[in-house]
Amino acid sequence: MTYIPNPTRYKNMSYRRCGKSGLMLPAVSLGLWHNFGAIDNLENARTILKLAFDSGITHFDLANNYGPPAGSAEETFGKIFKDGFKNYRDELIISTKAGWGMWEGPYGDWGSKKYLVASLDQSLKRMGLDYVDIYYHHRPDPQTPLEETMGALDLIVRQGKALYVGISSYSASETETAIGILDQLRTPCLIHQPKYSMFDRWVEDGLLDVLGDNGVGCIPFSPLAQGLLSNKYLKGIPEGSRASSHRGNGAIEEYAITPEKIAKVIKLNELALKRGQNLVQMALSWILKDDRITSVLVGVSKPEQLTDSIKCLENLSFSDEELCAINNILG
Ligand SMILES: NC(=O)c1ccc[n+]([C@@H]2O[C@H](COP(=O)([O-])OP(=O)(O)OC[C@H]3O[C@@H](n4cnc5c(N)ncnc54)[C@H](OP(=O)(O)O)[C@@H]3O)[C@@H](O)[C@H]2O)c1
Image (cartoon, rainbow, N blue to C red):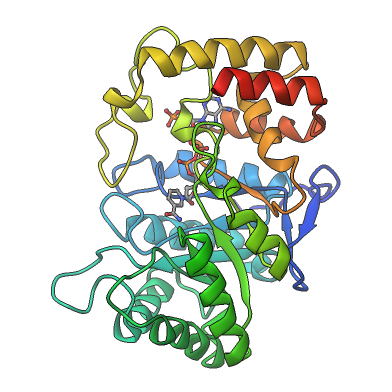
């Protein structure tokens, strides 16, 4: 049956300008790292993507290696896009990335021009797209000159295969250098995608300042520390959860669910309830409270999780007392 999106989809989502660019992103974006691979249920993936778009989420984030197996999340997205979203291409911001190991040999990893150009061609084929909206270098490469990697991003934009470019997991100083090179090339850095959650606050030590000062957007990934910042693991590791699934490729493992983390989760949860939120919602609004953040990039395994998480937008302000209490719990 033809998919007709919810006509009121733009009413309930807020949109934020990405740095000093012309591009607006939804305050909540959806990532396809897990739950969209060939090992996952296609109909569940379709339901989640439709629910997201119906909720005003215009931005879907992918990478060449998402799955498992690597490449299959882009294939899943391609199938669903072809069946349901093709007519809405101009209402979507689709991103992909290259930078982690993707294929055998010296040209399928890190940050050479050879790898970035070839990988994007493969991604476009898997997704059935003519171009992506944002193309990222997925992680810094200590061996390749940054001029070459940024030059590859610039080339790709000039070829019309991406509209904007970004970087992911670059340190504050690497980011500053990359922004400078891209400025010289006249392909500005649109956005940075760093890991950021209550349990991992490294971006507060300089990166957010660099991004704010340079007018570059920020879209944090794993804002729930892969599900740890929820009630899910309070009574052990439930069947079907990410930590129980041994999905590999960086997915959270059982050993990361420590008693120390759970003790903090319990206290954070109590605080969230006092704010009229659950912990998931508080963890997401805590990230969005900073106006240097463009969008928070969530992952979900079930449609209900997305409905639940989007409600974070109902309370984005924190009192000084609440922030202080959170800092005390996090230690
Ligand atoms: N640039 C990079 O290097 C990089 C790295 C990692 C991720 N990313 C991007 O960031 C996106 C998000 O990362 P992530 O999936 O790790 O984010 P996350 O939001 O921290 O974790 C997602 C997981 O949290 C649980 N969850 C989500 N909403 C929930 C809710 N309302 N209630 C209870 N549990 C909930 C689910 O776990 P269960 O599956 O257990 O149900 C879900 O799979 C990825 O899809 C990808 O696009 C980028």
